[in-house]
Image (cartoon, rainbow, N blue to C red; front, side, top):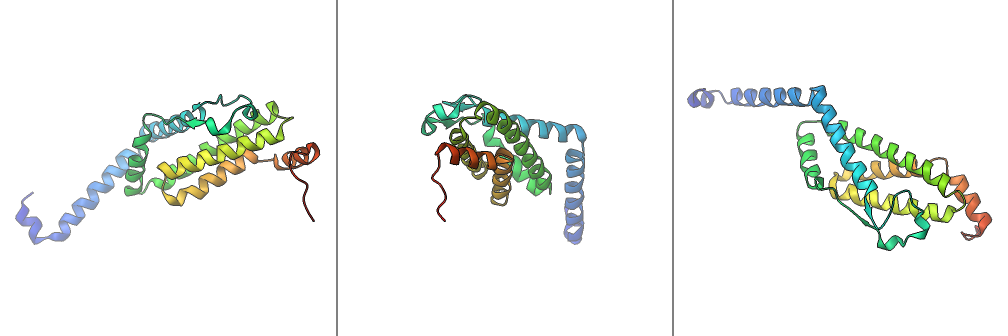
Length: 185
């Protein structure tokens, strides 16, 4: 296109820019195969980081592990997540990502909670320590890769999924075993 023509019609440049931006967004994010690959990649990354923790076997018995020695391992592609998020925000697609991320977070921790509640049914205090550690790990991951507005959502999803339906057991087991101090009235 002739540059002098664009100079005479500045709105035309804006129109072309908007059109190309819209076409790119529709072609990339409107493509079901690309959307599925993005979701799959995000889920693989998040699951890997949640499962591979130095000094801990995720389904081991957490109360036998010194929680101060556990270091999270970071996936080799973690550095790309903030850049991906920047692109998603630019193209108005971050909300879709955020909803998916919260959903996979809930699913992961609900499954982990179910397994650990069974394997640790006689160790409410150990379960509680593990829950505290996992919430802190997820909060830290959020702060490192997600926008500030997502931090509370991810924390709430983690807490709800990992503690869901277990508060009464934690309270009853903790009080009956003397693990926690009795409430003062």
